[in-house]
Image 1 (cartoon, helix red, strand yellow):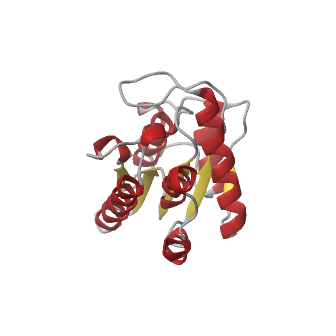
Image 2 (cartoon, rainbow, N blue to C red; image 1 turned 90 degrees about the vertical axis):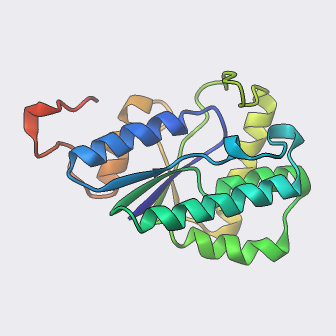
Length: 187
Protein backbone atom coordinates (compact mmCIF):
# COMPACT_ATOMS: atom_id res chain seq x y z
CA UNK A 1 0.00 0.00 0.00
CA UNK A 2 1.44 3.37 -1.02
CA UNK A 3 -0.26 6.47 0.38
CA UNK A 4 0.66 10.04 -0.57
CA UNK A 5 -0.20 13.20 1.30
CA UNK A 6 -0.42 15.96 -1.27
CA UNK A 7 -0.87 19.70 -1.15
CA UNK A 8 0.94 22.98 -1.27
CA UNK A 9 3.76 23.86 1.11
CA UNK A 10 3.17 24.88 4.71
CA UNK A 11 -0.11 23.04 5.32
CA UNK A 12 1.17 20.33 7.65
CA UNK A 13 1.84 17.41 5.29
CA UNK A 14 5.10 16.44 6.97
CA UNK A 15 3.64 16.47 10.47
CA UNK A 16 0.63 14.49 9.25
CA UNK A 17 2.91 12.05 7.44
CA UNK A 18 4.75 11.14 10.65
CA UNK A 19 1.56 11.03 12.72
CA UNK A 20 0.00 8.66 10.20
CA UNK A 21 3.13 6.49 10.03
CA UNK A 22 3.17 6.21 13.83
CA UNK A 23 -0.48 5.16 13.92
CA UNK A 24 0.07 2.60 11.14
CA UNK A 25 3.07 1.22 13.02
CA UNK A 26 0.86 0.82 16.11
CA UNK A 27 -1.48 -1.21 13.90
CA UNK A 28 1.40 -3.68 13.43
CA UNK A 29 2.15 -2.55 9.88
CA UNK A 30 5.66 -2.44 8.45
CA UNK A 31 5.85 1.25 7.53
CA UNK A 32 8.35 3.36 5.63
CA UNK A 33 8.17 7.12 5.04
CA UNK A 34 9.28 8.82 1.84
CA UNK A 35 10.39 12.24 3.04
CA UNK A 36 9.96 15.36 0.96
CA UNK A 37 12.91 15.47 -1.45
CA UNK A 38 12.76 19.14 -2.48
CA UNK A 39 14.77 20.19 0.58
CA UNK A 40 17.69 18.11 -0.68
CA UNK A 41 17.64 19.51 -4.20
CA UNK A 42 20.98 21.14 -5.07
CA UNK A 43 19.20 23.53 -7.46
CA UNK A 44 16.83 26.47 -6.79
CA UNK A 45 13.39 25.65 -5.43
CA UNK A 46 10.31 27.66 -4.41
CA UNK A 47 9.59 30.66 -6.64
CA UNK A 48 13.03 30.61 -8.28
CA UNK A 49 12.87 26.95 -9.29
CA UNK A 50 13.86 25.75 -12.75
CA UNK A 51 12.92 22.90 -15.05
CA UNK A 52 16.15 21.11 -14.09
CA UNK A 53 15.44 21.51 -10.37
CA UNK A 54 11.93 20.15 -10.71
CA UNK A 55 13.13 17.26 -12.90
CA UNK A 56 15.65 16.40 -10.18
CA UNK A 57 12.87 16.48 -7.56
CA UNK A 58 10.49 14.34 -9.64
CA UNK A 59 13.10 11.68 -10.35
CA UNK A 60 14.37 11.64 -6.75
CA UNK A 61 10.77 11.23 -5.52
CA UNK A 62 10.21 8.24 -7.80
CA UNK A 63 13.52 6.63 -6.85
CA UNK A 64 12.71 6.94 -3.15
CA UNK A 65 9.25 5.49 -3.66
CA UNK A 66 10.64 2.52 -5.61
CA UNK A 67 13.06 1.76 -2.78
CA UNK A 68 10.42 2.18 -0.07
CA UNK A 69 7.78 -0.11 -1.58
CA UNK A 70 10.37 -2.87 -1.58
CA UNK A 71 11.10 -2.39 2.13
CA UNK A 72 7.68 -2.03 3.75
CA UNK A 73 4.07 -3.12 3.51
CA UNK A 74 2.84 0.45 3.85
CA UNK A 75 4.63 3.47 2.41
CA UNK A 76 3.57 6.97 3.42
CA UNK A 77 4.82 9.65 1.01
CA UNK A 78 5.27 13.26 2.06
CA UNK A 79 4.19 14.53 -1.40
CA UNK A 80 3.63 12.72 -4.68
CA UNK A 81 4.81 13.21 -8.22
CA UNK A 82 1.62 15.18 -8.89
CA UNK A 83 2.18 17.94 -6.38
CA UNK A 84 5.87 18.06 -7.26
CA UNK A 85 4.76 18.48 -10.88
CA UNK A 86 2.52 21.40 -9.79
CA UNK A 87 5.64 23.37 -8.85
CA UNK A 88 7.16 22.61 -12.26
CA UNK A 89 3.96 23.71 -14.02
CA UNK A 90 3.84 26.90 -11.99
CA UNK A 91 7.44 27.73 -12.93
CA UNK A 92 7.64 26.72 -16.60
CA UNK A 93 4.22 25.50 -17.73
CA UNK A 94 2.92 22.03 -18.51
CA UNK A 95 5.39 19.67 -20.11
CA UNK A 96 3.54 17.32 -22.47
CA UNK A 97 6.53 14.95 -22.70
CA UNK A 98 6.33 14.34 -18.92
CA UNK A 99 2.58 14.05 -18.55
CA UNK A 100 2.07 10.44 -19.59
CA UNK A 101 4.82 9.43 -17.17
CA UNK A 102 3.24 11.52 -14.38
CA UNK A 103 -0.20 10.03 -15.09
CA UNK A 104 1.22 6.51 -15.07
CA UNK A 105 3.07 7.13 -11.83
CA UNK A 106 -0.08 8.54 -10.18
CA UNK A 107 -1.69 5.15 -10.76
CA UNK A 108 0.91 3.54 -8.46
CA UNK A 109 -0.55 5.21 -5.37
CA UNK A 110 -3.13 3.24 -3.42
CA UNK A 111 -4.58 6.52 -2.18
CA UNK A 112 -3.88 10.24 -2.39
CA UNK A 113 -5.09 12.57 0.37
CA UNK A 114 -5.07 16.31 -0.30
CA UNK A 115 -4.22 18.44 2.70
CA UNK A 116 -6.12 21.76 2.48
CA UNK A 117 -4.69 25.21 3.00
CA UNK A 118 -5.63 26.02 6.57
CA UNK A 119 -2.65 28.02 7.78
CA UNK A 120 -0.07 30.38 6.35
CA UNK A 121 3.38 28.92 5.73
CA UNK A 122 5.94 29.58 8.45
CA UNK A 123 9.59 30.02 7.54
CA UNK A 124 11.64 26.96 8.43
CA UNK A 125 14.88 27.74 6.63
CA UNK A 126 13.61 26.44 3.28
CA UNK A 127 9.88 26.96 2.86
CA UNK A 128 8.63 29.99 0.94
CA UNK A 129 6.31 32.08 3.12
CA UNK A 130 4.53 34.03 0.38
CA UNK A 131 0.81 33.37 0.90
CA UNK A 132 0.03 34.16 -2.75
CA UNK A 133 2.57 31.58 -3.92
CA UNK A 134 1.16 29.00 -1.51
CA UNK A 135 -2.34 29.54 -2.91
CA UNK A 136 -1.15 29.52 -6.54
CA UNK A 137 0.45 26.11 -6.02
CA UNK A 138 -2.74 24.85 -4.37
CA UNK A 139 -4.81 26.04 -7.35
CA UNK A 140 -2.36 24.51 -9.82
CA UNK A 141 -2.53 21.21 -7.96
CA UNK A 142 -6.34 21.25 -8.05
CA UNK A 143 -6.20 21.90 -11.81
CA UNK A 144 -3.79 18.98 -12.31
CA UNK A 145 -5.93 16.64 -10.19
CA UNK A 146 -8.83 17.42 -12.50
CA UNK A 147 -6.78 17.31 -15.71
CA UNK A 148 -5.25 13.93 -14.85
CA UNK A 149 -8.50 12.51 -13.46
CA UNK A 150 -6.71 11.57 -10.26
CA UNK A 151 -8.79 10.46 -7.32
CA UNK A 152 -7.44 12.59 -4.49
CA UNK A 153 -9.55 12.61 -1.36
CA UNK A 154 -9.66 16.09 0.18
CA UNK A 155 -9.23 16.10 3.95
CA UNK A 156 -11.72 18.10 6.03
CA UNK A 157 -10.52 21.69 6.12
CA UNK A 158 -11.63 22.49 9.65
CA UNK A 159 -10.31 19.43 11.45
CA UNK A 160 -6.54 18.80 11.23
CA UNK A 161 -6.61 16.84 14.50
CA UNK A 162 -8.99 14.34 12.90
CA UNK A 163 -7.04 13.77 9.67
CA UNK A 164 -5.28 10.58 10.76
CA UNK A 165 -8.59 8.99 11.72
CA UNK A 166 -10.13 10.25 8.47
CA UNK A 167 -7.35 8.61 6.46
CA UNK A 168 -7.49 5.32 8.39
CA UNK A 169 -11.26 5.20 7.94
CA UNK A 170 -10.95 5.85 4.19
CA UNK A 171 -8.39 3.03 3.96
CA UNK A 172 -10.72 0.74 5.96
CA UNK A 173 -8.12 0.29 8.67
CA UNK A 174 -8.83 0.09 12.42
CA UNK A 175 -8.65 3.25 14.47
CA UNK A 176 -7.27 1.54 17.57
CA UNK A 177 -4.11 -0.46 18.00
CA UNK A 178 -4.07 -4.12 19.03
CA UNK A 179 -1.75 -3.14 21.91
CA UNK A 180 -4.72 -1.43 23.55
CA UNK A 181 -3.81 0.95 26.33
CA UNK A 182 -0.06 0.61 25.76
CA UNK A 183 -0.38 3.39 23.16
CA UNK A 184 -3.54 5.40 23.84
CA UNK A 185 -4.87 6.84 20.61
CA UNK A 186 -4.98 10.60 20.24
CA UNK A 187 -7.88 12.27 18.45
